Image (cartoon, rainbow, N blue to C red; front, side, top):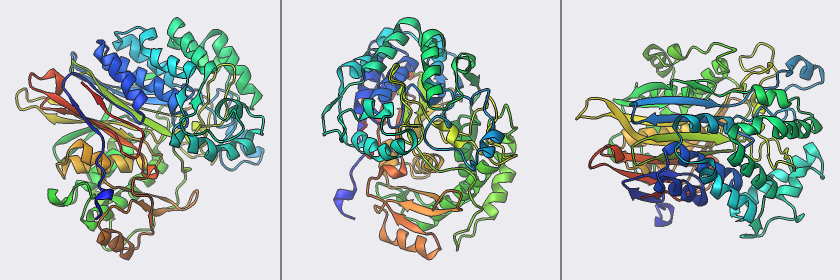
Length: 559
């Protein structure tokens, strides 16, 4: 394999704090908060806010978020659901009567209440140490004074512009905000977002909940009504985040946690449960070249097909449709699924009932006391709905695109309902020999739509089965399986060519439709991770190792 295909993931080492994210400006902002004594929650909000400015194709204050938080003082892990709901006036039957068979991708109809900023406020009230002015300062400065247009931002604007024009017309506010010159951005040309800066300043002054109240909510209601959304100021005011417990499984002695439904954390844990039924390759098979054993890649692909079928059958808003989490994560269920895998042939699964897509950021932070945050935030499908409010600068996600219009589907559109989410944050725990308690070991997650649980599973296997470090785990080549077209069976395997040649050839012989992507291709997601080495900052001799994905514009930050 050429050395050019063994580019290592960026790695930062420290002992007092660390931040990872898919853009270097965001990790710099988060680390600054940690160095000034901020809690991991403060750093996470600061990082997320900067990403909302400089990575608007994958995030924004018009999006949703899911959190895992480790509270070192309480020795407790919490989950926070910052995903929004459909309008209280949402009506699937009406959309079907209008001739729609699926939810649109762009425009006002797929917009749900953006829940991320409300979750910032909830987490900050419970754990925050720094003022909102300090936390949002870097994001405000970047939005007001500008940031250099970077390659993926430029490409994302050009990629989505024709879809926005088709859905909202050539005079849509998106073009005035994100394509103001009537042409593609030039590399390093300064991008300014003054309306967004003003809204962030308002949140710093009046509180994060101000996004959902008063004149800010009224302004949003007017902008959303103008594009045909039924979300109004009352829907914004009524929205609440949800504190809950994480869900978990054990993978070869390591406790793996994620967020419960409506998050896809369940899918990743179910995949790991299936893989645990099989003998893993020797640790020597794992490395910067990926897994050298075709059998393990095949088993992972087949486990993904089975877990995604369960997702389509069950995963939805648990407040509106019971999700049998305990049964789906049981050993009996894992054994039954594993028994269905043919080691000699790729299966043809049932057709998918959920749409493909992606547009997400993952970030993590660990502070000097050992508190940790795993946070994933998204506006879905690259710039989300394409709807931008020029008054507030908010661009809205289109997570409602994931609702089904099929009568009786668990994820069918209903009033004030949360949609199924691809998002999943992760944390890994190992037993501490000194205390006998499970302690945080790795804080990790990824972006990539339906690829997320598949990428996360591969990263966990590399760490646990392969014993590799976090830089190798996030930088190694990977794969994911998806439908060739909407609602097709998930058969097509997107895979990086950095695997040994025999792996790609043998996968094809097993019947997998193999499609090679780029050597370091964002199509297979961005993963980032922080390892708490020897117990991390809370331990006398602990330290931190932080790695960001070389497929992203991220640089890890640690001190």
